[in-house]
Length: 314
Image (cartoon, rainbow, N blue to C red; front, side, top):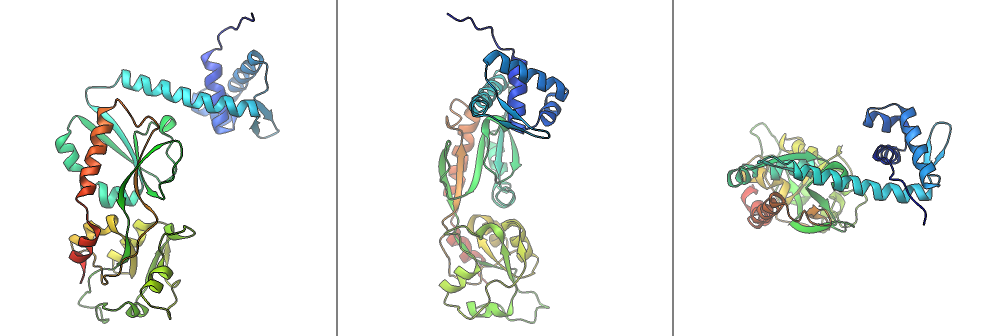
């Protein structure tokens, strides 16, 4: 029987970092060593395994098939080790890392978060913004809140909120010479504000879809500025720069406080919704994760976007 000597952890760490970065130099920066040290450790691992893990070029490296398979397993393994160490050394006050899009954090989560802190003072919540796919093991994220179709693979997904779409704008100002909006075809006299979230996404309403469904056919649905996020388009509407398409949960607070109005009752359903996304094990055994998800469900149960439209209509 062939005898195997244990592979040094430093060699596995160096290879995993180099495979993730596809760069010995970037891996070295992460590990606080030199690129030569990373290269040496990778060669040591290749010699031990008897397989080639990288194709080495003049300025770049590329994983072999064996390297890809090993890298995927090691990334998961090191993530589990880091998670186990975090839990073993967790202080009395539990930390909970939540990843969500900027607009949802600002417009829905932040105005409500004080209620969770009131009921769970032992949990310290850290909110991080981003809308890319969450890597729970690598980034140490406990819960992700995402706006999308919900068809996420390799994770546990739970519907949180629907996302109906309807026009929103600032209330009329005394110095505004235009009369308040009462009919959709009056949008011709107003600037349309766009965001890129609907571009190329089937079932996500844009201005062309809303105007057509409202029976407005003779209007250029593409005119007006385009913003990189829903949040920026809605902030421009609050500032009085035009009319944007609001996403129900993201504008409910501003409608209720009178910063925005919804001038029409016509609402379009949205193929995208807001989702709670958790690791494959769902964060089982973590009371802070369970408490936060339970709180999210309770808060979502109290949201009625249709009622919010009625409150904000003007």
